[in-house]
Length: 295
Image (tube, rainbow, N blue to C red; front, side, top):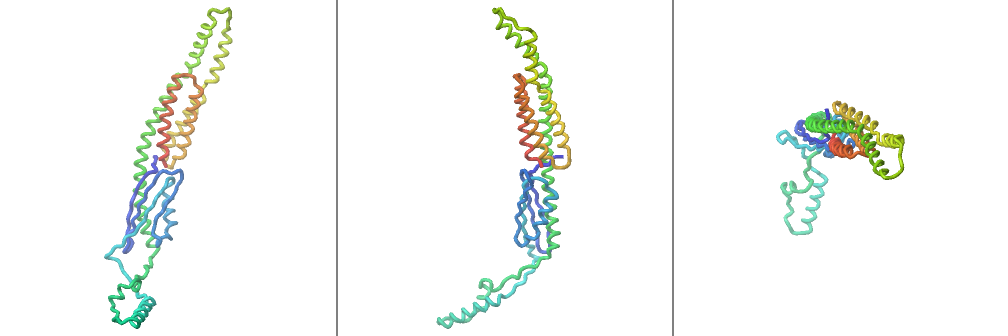
């Protein structure tokens, strides 16, 4: 089943007094490109995050936004006095009182408002617990992304099947038309020769006409291109039913289909087949656009 490269997912999980919120957005890209935004405090988990993503997503640009929110009624704070800074402030107050006739008393309230005199002690995290919690949030987000990518993939697959059937129908019409092209050329050539020689004492043998027809038939023969195009279509249909990512293979096949179609158009000198080729190229181009979004 095909998967689109476009998707979005969100997941949350709690770790003691903290909530991890993970948002993942995936976009089209030729390769897998993981863009991660996470607080510096949890940078050591980056390699784990990239590994988890790589296990689930094979191709596409993956943008991951991870933020944390405290659970306020569970938070525990440890405040400490920055004694060196407090002493420095006191020295300054004392010096000011010596230089200027002002009240030298300093209240506790004043100290509480001084920058960085009272600081919150950095939290020591249990990194293993955080890793498990973040993994839970990541799994939820990735599950959501994958579900969306599958839904988009189903829509893409239905559209591709419809367009491939149109190409198969056009190709059948080309195959039916191709044998008639040589005979039409032969008749037209004979009529032109007869018209040119109508009032002239010159004759051209039937063998000479047949030789020209044979040269034309060899030059305009599209049997090989039709066979290869049919083979590419068969492979294309086989690939879109596989479970593994097939976007690159489909992209290659559609390029080959386009090349064979161009060759048919270049070799055929029949206006009807040329019209079929235009229709087929239009469908191939639409498929090519869709394939760019397949993982």
